[in-house]
Length: 212
Length: 318
Image 1 (spheres, each protein chain N blue to C red):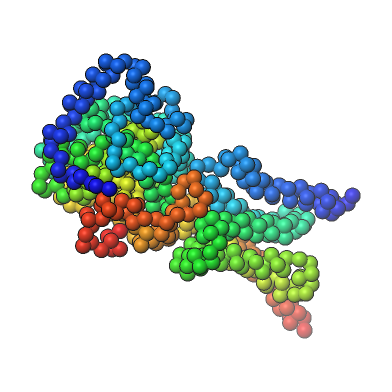
Image 2 (tube, rainbow over the protein chains, first blue to last red; image 1 turned 180 degrees about the horizontal axis):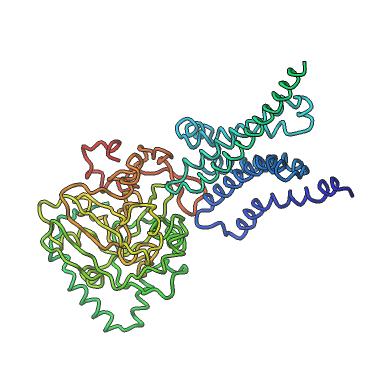
């Protein structure tokens, strides 16, 4: 097997199984009745935090590729993003089913009235088009440029998610601030990269102009 | 439910020493076996795992204020609660409260009263007959439990201290000791934790000084050796591990109001019509249930306490 084949056939399935572990942990502990005194809270917090973590992993893969020069990391981006959506969906469904008994009215009232729900709900909804267009087919249909533009929505999801977490905690904002800081650094890395690309491009253009 | 006004009680009716002596007679005459039996008889439904090392409380008076709702387990009550002196996680109190030493313990009583002084907790407990009070507890975080407390009416304690006419409020404080309460090494809140009640609230028969839980001495994590329980208010009013009681003229600034005045007030009455700025108070999750249930005004104690707040705008004075 070539390196690429090893990545695709061995490392990727292993990564998939590892990424399922947080869900496995929930199932295992639910089965043994071991989700603590307030299981609904445990499920909500667990799925929420893993959604944020997978958003962070998704955003980190590309900068990590620049730094390490290890290009196969790009193979895991879609998977990481879809896992963020998976845990986000579990998180939303816990809230929708157990907090609101499947009543849209209650959810809507929350979305309108409560900033932390507004932020969290927006973050979740913005992930839906990203998940739908995550296939090769959609990339082809949309064209790389448009597709890339659309998928920058992930930064709004990250911001919304961090804000949602920040507004939810009662007192200790250490952890939400930590997540927001990591997202901020990852966004800054992209902006910095884009700026230096533009600079390089304009330098080339300037050189052309000088030649002519 | 018929409620006897606390003010009807005369000092003679609550003479504590008598009862204390009676209890000793009882235990002395009947012996340890009877005491053990009595625990079983007086504490039905307490079979679920408790702390075998804990001292049992016997001779608990039944209270007309008991709810007949299903009680939360001893484990629910003792492993899931807020007590920031031991950490911010709701599992932290159970994990870290072993460092608290609930004996020897004194309460300093001061301010506008005729009997200021420093009182030993073991004496205080002997002043009054202990009761069982099964109350709903509604946390401001929108979860709730049903808890069988053991204790005596705060009113009895207050009256014994003979507050003067200037005493309009009671202020209470929690112990400050970083070695006993490791959470106090962090400035999460401004220590000591402070809470207060208006005098008529403090004299209301529902307000309780709890020294026990489930027929046993109060575990450290639930506020040993003595804590306040005010079932019609959010749980944070129930100040724990109390070392000071002060009778004052002005409304005291309680810790959560001091920390975030837009979110927490002095009264903190359970009120489904006044949402927390960040979440709803219309409903709650009863620990042990999956779906949320409606929150009741004054946590279901409106018949008893609503009159205390007649004429007040509870939307403003939350």
